[in-house]
Structure formats: C-alpha cells, structure tokens
Image (tube, rainbow, N blue to C red):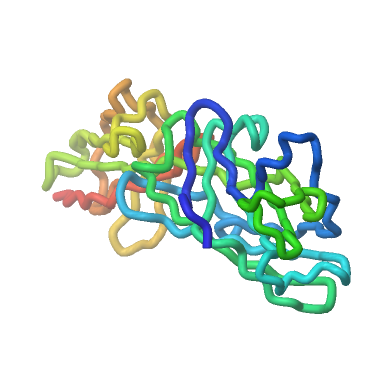
Length: 278
C-alpha cells in the first residue's frame, strides 16, 4: 500500500513514490528497461474532473497493460500506477495527484492485463486555483525482483522499470454556481421584468466561492407547459460576478441563467425562477 496518497505542490518538483526513485540512481546506475507498455488509459470515465470546495472526489482510472511473457504482474514486488500532474513535465510539475494504492491488474491473457485504480481528491487540501485546467498523466511500472529498495545491498540494475509521461489527461475544473431572480412577481403582461443573478466559482485555496467576472451568460426562458428553453439574450457578468438585465413579460414561465465551460471552470445552470404574468 502506498503512503502519502495525494501529493500537491505549487513549486519545486513533484514528490515521487519511494519505490519509483531509489537512492542507487544517484550512482549513475539505472534499472533495465521493462517490457511493459500502456494503452487505453481512461481517467474519470473520460469526463472532466469538476471540484467544489468541500468533501472528496473519487476519480477512477482504467488502462491496459501489455507486457512480455517473462514479466510477472502477479508478483508481490511488481508495481504499476498512473498519476496526474499539472505542468510541462512530471519531474518539474506544479502539482500532482496520486492514489492510496497501486493499480490492481487482472490478466486477460499471458501478456495483457486490465488495470484499475482510483485517486481521491480533497479540493481544499490538494488543489490550487492556478492549476485549474488541462492536466497530464504519468504511467509507470516497476519490478524489484525480490529486492528491498531500503536495504544496503540494493542493486538498482537488477530491477526493471518503464515510465511514460505527457499522456493526455483530464481537465480539472472549478465548480461554478449560478443564481437567478426575476421580479416583480406577479407582473402585468407587457411590463418590464428585471432578472438578476450571480455567477461564482470554487476557490480551492480559500475553500469558498467568489464572483466570476466578465463571463458570457445566457438568459433563457421556458414557457409553462413546455420542456424547452429558448435563449432570450446573452449578457456578461460584472467584475464581481453579478448579472442584471431586463425583458418584457409575455406569458407565464421560467427564467434561468446558463454559463458555458471555460478552460478553468465548469458550466453552470441556475435553478429556474417562475414568473407569473397577469
């Protein structure tokens, strides 16, 4: 079992797992290339990871591991894993996430295995606002051949290793929230309605929600008795995330605001507000 399950850092190198970086590497020796390759890596079922400010998110990861016939994936000292990182490279990543346990692999044939694992993210502890956006994945496998990396006679050249970085990973996005209020209500037909609201998004470092300014937001309307919303107009949020516009009252129905996904923030839908037109 791994310790220090989830790792995050804004500066310096990403902290690597103990078995991945043995001390003997400092002598210039290296593990022999391991006959293992990775494919079909799927993170969070192919969907963006959308994180609020509280609780924990469990991110599932699956992949296919293809290996030489002489690689024993069932050995106790064989390890494989997929981690997530944000930055130009794994070693110089600005932030990283890893799971509590190594991946569990089930043989599909003598040389192919299907692997599963998960990463638990606690946003207020593990994420930084500046690292919202596109992340990458790092996959590796290692066989120790019965050796203990902590022993004095550990010989890194007798271990096998393979690493692959720069794998396309998921977007890690800040959760957004929208409100809407149409007034006055009830309203006379043909009168002016003022529709207000606010767009906020998760601040992971402050564990709070702050206004998301200068964002395009659609005002939509659904007539009572129907299921389809129609966009009435598009407006932009103020610097503090506030929204305000006016429309004419015509029939009973529901107003809502809708924002789109950006490179750092998920989309949001306000709970509909009913307007009674007399």
